[in-house]
Image 1 (cartoon, rainbow, N blue to C red):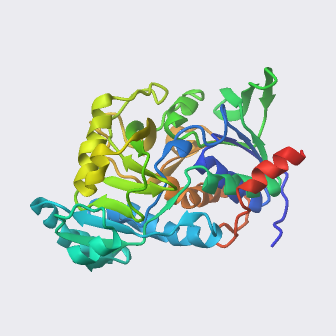
Image 2: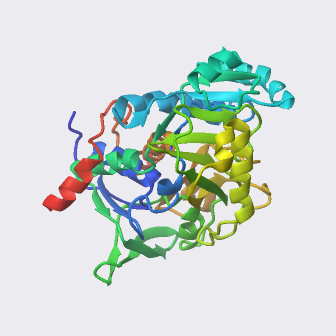
Image 3: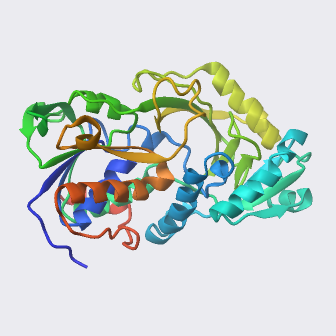
Length: 397
């Protein structure tokens, strides 16, 4: 279906997963789209996550809204991104007595959220994953998966550009132009050409993830974002073929995920004021080893390939969280006309890689209502171009 083309122009600030999915959605609805990213595409949070295709089990007890979002989007992404994921399923594993207390609420939560969950005996679990802690008490199988942190997102960018979106990496939005309660444009700095320019779209969307607070401040408004970094550890060994989760309330080092020939252990959590102020606490790295080894003992002695930190854009005020784990993993769109009496600016933030398409749909619906565009979302059923199409088009150009 070829959408009706509109003269209306939207500027998206941020070239991560949310920005890419939004560019794809709006391009399918026939809008003119320009996306500006200060660095390379996916160079922020998107390119640093551990690559988990969530089934929602992690949130089924204490954050059911996020759990439902994850399982729904898990199934949609499998359909529109064929051959992108390793559909290896996941195991939630109890290794201590206190983990067993979590089993019943976990099973009830999965059922309430529509997450397929199969309880396994230790023998059944060890048959699937021989490297698991042999002292495990029970395991629950869910439809998790793993993915390359960047390649899925590049499929959205490839398809968006194919449908007319202008994608501008290394182009920083250095300021927003505000007159009489209206965001009328933006100042851009192209770091490749060192050119300074202005752009005057009909609407600006702030999709800068943990940096969205900084972008909003350019217009004199705020968004309730709590940047929450976490440490991840890559090991030079594929210690499991399924996604291995600890069967307990979300904590440090309680996921071990296979990525090609590696294993990624994650993650810790703390909060910061500035998402650019990233560091790598060595005690957090050590915790990935000790906690990951409770699931898979071989983690304790595996060779370290790399360790890094990534910042989650959690929705919540600065007074609400000490570690970041207190905040929900859902997402939200802010129309600043409603929240700040400022027209021309919308912010989309929160969420996670698994829910990026749904985030874009929610935001695109708001954008279209504001611009009086009556076009339905098509992203639930539109199969995306392969990630290689983005780079092939760049070489051809």
